[in-house]
Amino acid sequence: MKKLSFIIFFFFLFIGCSEKKKVVYENIMKDYAKIYYEENMRNINGQDRYDISIQALKNYNDRYEKKYDLSKLKDCDDDSYTSITVNDSKKITKYEHHLSCK
Image (cartoon, rainbow, N blue to C red):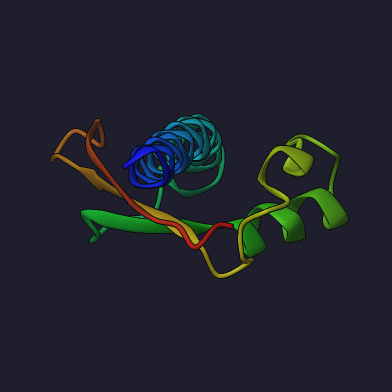
């Protein structure tokens, strides 16, 4: 019985830790995606949804300046992205995260 309790404890501990990491990654991507959208994509007309990937942030860092600290997302795949939905006045109304992280 003690073994089972021990296994269940570590299972829930692991699930809790991975959920916390997921929230941290989502918050980082939300911040970075908002900045990227406002500085690089806001003037694109005819769209109400924009995808900002970690690869796009890397490309920006390589071309211009090291604006995004991507070491915070080192456990996530480059094709992970956040989708931003905007209204008619180009204000962000929704974030959807599609992250593949360890």
